[in-house]
Image (tube, rainbow, N blue to C red; front, side, top):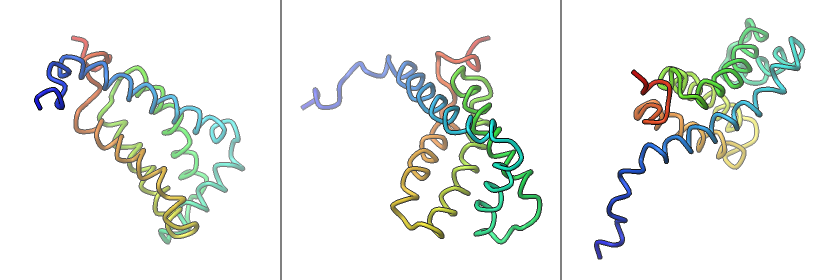
Length: 138
């Protein structure tokens, strides 16, 4: 039954982390680019929609811009593995807000995607960028 544990795969953990990191980062870059390119009008709308369920009504443009730039530029940093832990924390916060927004406005089904992606970023926050990251270079 030992074959069920795939012995020896531990040596490939760094590659697995790199694959997850690159895919997550690219997904967030694509997801964030439209928001970054949309400018102040999009940032304001995003900030109003995301922060209203939390009872926060001030500075919607700032909140929307922050989320947009974290998604896009944070995604790039995740791809290359630079500042993986703090950026993963910021991504998890953005996704927690998105989860709450979807739960209150659209229900659980709409919140499943941000919940899953948030869990992946929490994992990266604890494990780091792995052996194939700039963070790991000395």
